[in-house]
Amino acid sequence: MKTLREILWNRHRSVEPKLDRMWVKTLAPSLRGEETPAGANPLIAFGWTLWRELVWPSRKIWAGLACAWVVILTLNMVSSEPTTRVASKVEPRSRDEMQALTEQRRMLAQLLDLQAETSRTRKSRPPGPRSDRAAGISAV
Image (cartoon, rainbow, N blue to C red):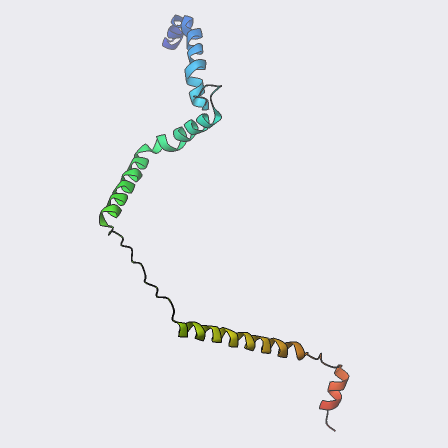
């Protein structure tokens, strides 16, 4: 006695080649991630794969994030105060101030030259041998 499955299989066996063609043409590429045509731009294929893998499964989450950003940007624009430019008024320096600055710079240059000369003339002496130091320290 034949089972129901065998009866249906024998009845629809003639449709099997058509189903195989449909599988190869439409369903198999979608399962393997080959939904874009073979000659398509790789950038488009990458974009489509990225869309299908990252965005489409969690589209409700992405829509919620987009709405949150729209609300944040709207509140930011509504609550921001207009900026006003305040130009600081810089007055030119008087002649006395300029002379004082020139004098300070001259004195600083003299001090730096003086310190440079003292550091150049004073040489650090390396310590002598240990035997000399020990003789001076020891007491009898």
